[in-house]
Length: 395
Image 1 (cartoon, rainbow, N blue to C red):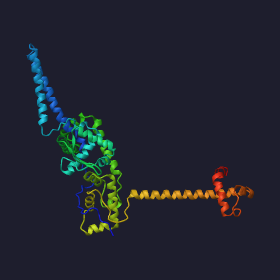
Image 2 (cartoon, rainbow, N blue to C red):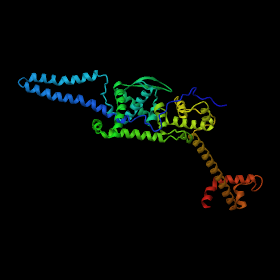
Image 3 (cartoon, rainbow, N blue to C red):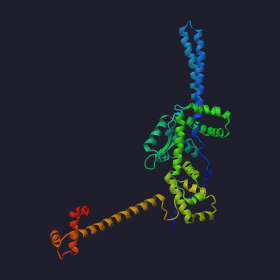
Image 4 (cartoon, rainbow, N blue to C red):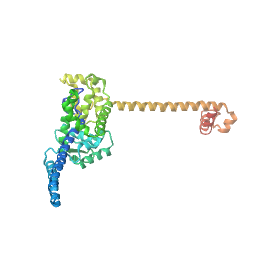
């Protein structure tokens, strides 16, 4: 009797074709917005201060008090206007802590939360556990909690809803200015991609300047870290051959991570379980039901947290490797024991040959007959306890 599948209903999920990049280089272009927005108001304040301040000083040299009061008003006015515009601006792109100043881990975490919001269709994430974020970022639980705390302290994210205790989770809300900036990064990345392909000098100038103004180590290290981590993560996944033949590749594995926030263990287990069912006849059954997009069907099953095998007898590659290792270790232990016992028997036989009847009787007086089963057992115990190691070295 076949066990019931955990998923009561499986829907086919649209799958991005193999080779497509769903992230589209969001991080690589986040520098543009911050540098453009910050540069303009600062430049205007400096210019107005230099022009207006010089006029007041020149026209009021005879009245130092008036000069001081007028000069302070002239300098204060443009600064006040900039502050007022910042507070009233709906976009609020300039943050108290610009995204360009975030550490690599904090920026990576913010990107995860942003993509969760996009998948959720809201400005707050899906329910996420710290353990899930830890697996995704490949770091410790304490480091993840510290990064979350710092983003909240910098007023970039806030907790939306949460559940404590076993199986706890939290939904995070990205503040408006940060969400708008991340959205702009995602949009601007398309412009950068077009520039890289066409080599347009007109596009190069406004894009190259903001990127060049940021420390190269900051941006490049973040991008390289994310790329390396992504590549390493994907390389750990072993895709069964029958799924490869159906066209499932690394691009689909990335989609499973980005769409459903699955851990490497969940993805690996799902791939192996689905491949096992396909070998047991599930492929023909699905086709007979009219399912044409086998990979889309698999995505629909994975959406609810993973794929559970239908057929009995499934064992993951990791469990199989552990089972085989246990068997090998048990066989080695058995072989060592048999080898040790055989060596003792051979050494004892050699030892008996070196002893006379009188010596053996003196060592152990036989209860029944000389060198019968019981006498030999007593002599062997004496040999193992008192003489075997010395005799072995001499032999």
